[in-house]
Each structure stands twice: as C-alpha cells, then as structure tokens.
Length: 318
Image (cartoon, rainbow, N blue to C red):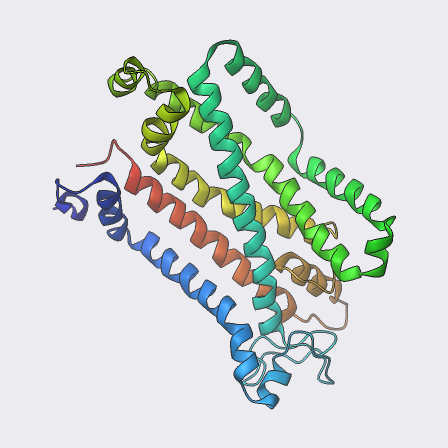
C-alpha cells in the first residue's frame, strides 16, 4: 500500500500536506541538507569568536597568510586562495550573501506577486487587463540584461556621490541592496500570473459568493478566503523561485556585475577560482569547493520545491 494513502482523513490541509511531505524521502533529505547548511552558516562566525586564537586565525576568511594556494588538508578543509585565506570560511561567508539575496528576492516575489495577481484576478475587467499587460511588457525584457543595466546605472550614480567615495563598505552594501531590488523586480512576474489564475478559479466559488452576499469587502474576502486557499501553490513556487534567484546572483557576480570585494558570494568565489587558472597549474579546489556547495544547494531547493508541490497537490490527495 502507498505510504501517502495512510494519511489520516481528519487532519487539516496543512497537517495532511506535512504528512505527505514526510513520506517524500528526497524532499526530507533536501530539507535536512538545507537546515544543516543554514545552521553551519549561522554558527560558524560564532565558533570562530569563541574558539582558540590559533584556530580562529587559520579559519578567518579575511586573514592573509603565507600558505598560498594550499590544497585541501586536515588544517584547511577547502584549501586556501591566492592570499592564503581559508576557503572553507570564505564559502560559508559567501553563503550568507547568496542565501540572503535568495531569501530577500523570494520575499519580494511573494509580496508583489501575490498582491498583484490577487488584485488582478479578483477585480477582473479592465483593471485585470491593464495589470496583466504590464506583466506581459515586463516579461518581454530579457531578465539578465534588465538587471545588468539597472545595477550598472545605479552603481555609476553611486560612484559620483561623496558618501560612497568616503566609505567603500557602504557602497558595497548599497550595491547588494540594488541587487535585491533588481532580482526582486523580475522574480514576481510568474508568481503574479500563477496567483491570478488561482484567484480566477476561486472567486466564483460558493463560499466566496456567500461572503460577498453578506457584505464582506473585497480585501477581507481576499485575506480570509482566497489567499489561504492558494497558500500551497504559493509556498511551492517560492521554493522553486529561490534557486533561480541564487543562480541569477551567482551568474551576475561571476560576470563582475554582482557582489564586489571585499564582500564575497558563491559567484565571486567561482569567478576568482577561474581567474587563477593558468597553463602551469589548475587550482581545482578554488572552483570545485564553492561550485559543489552551490550546485548541491540548488538541487536541494529544487527537490524541496518538487516535494512541496506533491504534498499540496489536490489531485493526488487520497
């Protein structure tokens, strides 16, 4: 008998989805991997602060040392780079930027996409037509080119400001915020379309018509009846949106248009590793280590999204 068919019938939709999700081994494995990765990324700076001075000095991601291009060993698990910095710490600190950009971009997609799609789908008529034509117009723009132009233009303006010239660190932080805005500006379009389609199918349901007949306002109907019923679809798409945003950021950083030194992301680490390739020797760990972490994280997020889709799929429920 299929394990999914053993889910009790008296549970709420959320509880049933969780029971079905637990039966998906690939989804659970991906969730555990992401949880461990997040725990290590958050705990590693704390470990360095409370660890002995020698250990903290070796694994300090900004500490310059003599053993340049040292391959992975018992002391430096991912080896060292051109400046003798520990690559394990660099990968973990780069994960902070890459994952943060993925989370913020996904939240922007959630906020704008759900509101835009819900309003367009529930209102209908000319309002729906105008709002979706705007989405179509934005869809026609190449994503990478749009974000690249936005980042380049904003960076050029920032370089002329007196405050950024005095504080390069502030300029780097503002650049990351610009990446948030740019990636968020292109990530909500598909979400808006998906939410609109779901709202169009729900707004004529009996419970919505009953609420409307009782005098409920549109915003109350959306908040209390319609959006909770598309929660599963939204959560599933969010899990699939995050890897796309992380990949966009890594690609931009690889091209030199994303995160700038001294800050680091997975894309910048891979770009630095590729830059050190020469005919005499290839320092493989500079590319392989951040690349493997990036690929496994993207795979885990995609497996997680697939598992959430199966867990919330109404047609496959027992």
